[in-house]
Length: 467
Image (tube, rainbow, N blue to C red; front, top):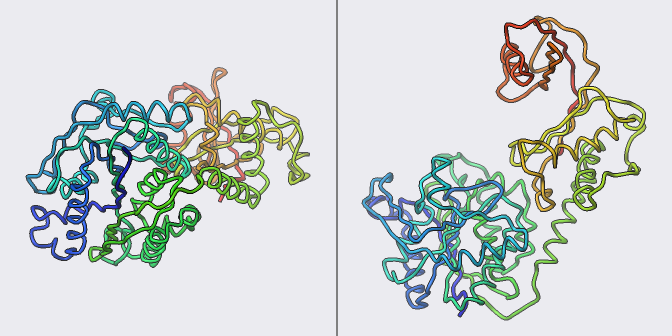
């Protein structure tokens, strides 16, 4: 037994007649194509449907696998009395998560109890229910493997897909895989996110590459094009492509429509002859892109990235300064903060107000590692995360005494001191718009009461941001 069908299906609730109430006729080709897939899956009679969705409980650092005996959901919030209860393939879920752990691919079992801690319901999302609505019209004797992708590196998603295929083969499961995802949400001015010419270009490019079976070019698609298109299907597709690793394929595009400003692509991937695995080539391709990106950066963020990378690979700090380090970085001594972000969210930040090493360069080397592996607010960065982390380096000027009227939260950072305690806040932080906010946060960080007698200092930073 094996994965016997590979399908791309969108999830617009309006395509369901109980919700569309006539509007579904505007995407009649999409509806007909989804019916076609339902009929094809009925002929395949799978034991398990592997469904990848963008709209389940998403964690930024681990792919989620729903794990319980049963899972149910409904489309009541869309005004339709449509519901579904399915049995989860727990054995397949367990085996995949176990193998992913051995391969250091981050996954998490999503249970009713652990989701409750986050105030999240354990249920089928609309990204699952809409495709399953069309499948279950024709076939209902199946279990579900319910996966919510995560914004982890593309190669990790692909590798996870290949592990899913391996486990399916080992367990002798007859399965089909459905990548649920809409394409660009920026096809028209009245669409959910307005119009961007990148939308149509993105959809044409991605669907064309799927039809050609060109995995390498899908991985090499322009990042700006992807971001400007505002899609939610690419990561579902990458997971499905991973399940095809080691085999050639061609895409059969059943339909593509976008009258509501969102691209709805419906397709089947037709498996061909066996080929060599692409995992090593794709990993090399990703490494080459990351290396090129690093080499194009200014020396401050380039050194921060190289420092953390070296430490994660060797377990030791860099000893020799690279030849791109400037004389200023070698000769000056400054306090430095290194910040790591993923998709705009903080992933680590450690710094020094005053220099603690022999040079600015060594300060960056040390603090980049500290931010990556010793910020107590986060678990230590893993090597596979480096591709999605953005680095920034803040070089501090000498602090100078200041009064409240001398401050400006956009221009100056501040230091508060009292009774041997000290708190620092960098300038130009999102959400810190007033002097009062800036002082209050710095006092709180230092554990100093607002009614205590404290001293203020201000400083500027020169901020270097990885593009």
